[in-house]
Every structure is written in structure tokens, then in C-alpha cells.
Image 1 (cartoon, one colour):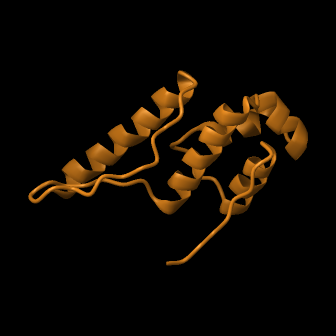
Image 2: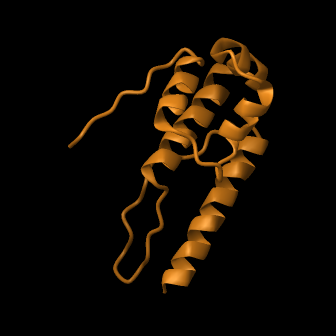
Image 3: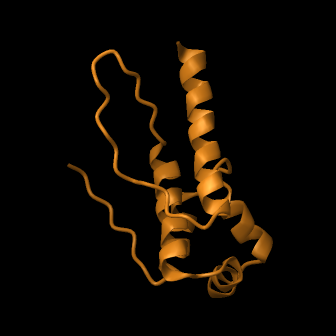
Length: 108
């Protein structure tokens, strides 16, 4: 079961990458699993990365614009855009701000 969940998580990241490549907003609402269903979710940092990617699409901000605003090479932004690459939350927060939006944390 654990291996299957890891495979499903990998497929979920592939879906995120496909949405990004197509310039589409990745859905962020989650349905509760039905009885006997297994749910696979993004990690917290992957979720923030999706929020950044969606923000770029919503604001029509190009990677080169993010690079200029952050003062980094375009390759760094390409790395940030990769759903499989680990990215520090501070970097993602700055990247989101470079799109004109703000990341707000909450604990419920």
C-alpha cells in the first residue's frame, strides 16, 4: 500500500507539471475521500509551490520577470517552477510576492 501511495503522489506531481506546461490553474480544492478510498495529498511545501505557479498564471507573470524581480538567474526560477524540486518556503514566499501577491500562513 505504501508503494502505491508513493506512486500516486508521483503521478500527482506529474499532473502539476502538466498543468504548468499548459499554463492552466491547478485545482486547489480537495474532496474528502469516500469510505474505502485512499487520498494522496501534496506536502505543505508542494502546496505552496502550486499556489506560486497558480499565482504566476493568474497574474500572467513570466519566469524572466520573476527572475528580474528576485535578482536571480532565469535557471533559478526554472528550478523553483519544477514541482519535484525542493524549494525553501522563504524562496517561495519571495517568488509569490514577485507576482504581486502575498503568502499568508494560518494554523487552524
